[in-house]
Length: 154
View 1 (cartoon, helix red, strand yellow):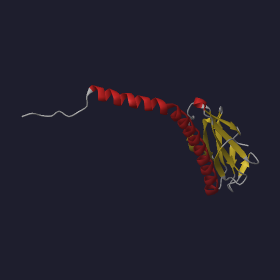
View 2: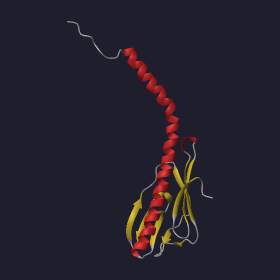
View 3: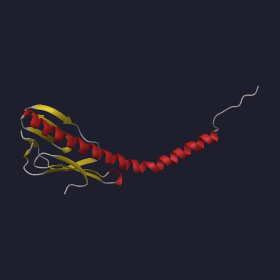
View 4: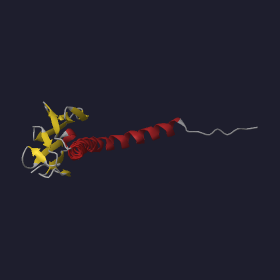
């Protein structure tokens, strides 16, 4: 009785490995830019979500709620607090992500509007990792509504 062996020869296996390596080498540079863009997007969305949380809690509790950046800036984290109670805390962003703009604490009054600082608030978040620049802008209008949009703050 004769059995037929099934499987791959060494040459077929090495050819497949070489093709995977070539495709991976071509895709890697694009993936670095994509990953940097996702880090910027994640930080912008986290900041916008915590601004919305602070506004919501100010309305619900009828208290001032403050979003305070870390002493080194928004990219190093922030905390949302009401009457001494920390409601949310964000740790440092991924390396290569920076934030610019308003560096002071933002306070939502009991009516949900931004009471400090007066006027519109903008925080720009960017990454220039791997040569591809990715930018997002998190904006608060005077009524306290939050918006995270693509592009630099103007």
